[in-house]
Structure formats: C-alpha cells, structure tokens
Image (cartoon, rainbow, N blue to C red):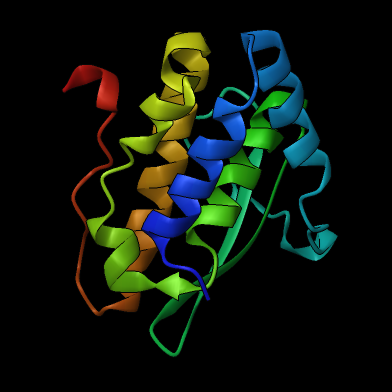
Amino acid sequence: MSTILEIENELIEAFGLLDSWEEKYDYLIELGQELPAMDPAQKTDSNLVKGCQSSVWLAVECQDGRLCFQADSDSLVVKGMVAVLNKVFNHQPAGEVLESDLRFFESLGLWRHLSSQRGNGLTAMVSHLKQAAARCLGQAEALPATNPQEE
C-alpha cells in the first residue's frame, strides 16, 4: 500500500497535467464519480460532518490501527473532494493521518479555487478524520485541522 505522501504526490502529478482550473474541476468531479458507493444505512446524522454546506457523510472505523471509512456527499464537487480524502487517508495508519499536514491541497490548487464555504467544509472533513484517527490511537482529541491558506 502506498503511503500518504506517495498518494499526495500522485495526485499532485495528475492535477499538474491539467492546464486549466476547468479541467481540474472536471477531474475532481470525475474522481467523485469513481468514489465507491456508501452503504445507505451509514448515511446517518452521527456520520454527517458538521461544518459542511453540502451534506457529507464519513463512516469511520478503526481497524488494526488504520482509519477505514466509507464516504459520500450530495454535491458533485464536494464528492470529488471526499474522493481525494478517500484516496489519501482510507486504510492508512491512524498516526500518519494525524500527522499529515495537508499542504498538498495547495499544490493541487484547490484552496485557491474553492469558495470559502467549500474550503471550510474541506477543513471540517479533515478535522473529522483527524478526530477519528486520534480516537483510533486512544487519544482524547486531535489538533484541529488547519487550512494551509491561513499558514
């Protein structure tokens, strides 16, 4: 299995091959369409990510110290962002998820082209996953996810 950094670099390379933001936007939607289907029974209020304008569900489990999750969204663009998080974090060691800095989102160009509401939603999704990673490691709470735009 590839590491978080290797997957981030693959995504940076794939997005880098696209010339315009419109092409990147289309690719993001395509990634969302390829996201594995989420079990409808997992689309519960307890799996709904707080802080997202669109509905986003993340059903996260800890399996042998790894974060494993199903995810979905009712928005095409947000579902693409969920698919990126799925590629990067699903089945990764919880400690590595917790330590990831997410600067690759800036390299993808996502922060510059997302509305502030979608950027906040992305930050909320990452925070949700980091909290789950902290619980997987037996920690009470993780540090909140940071938005690389603010650093």
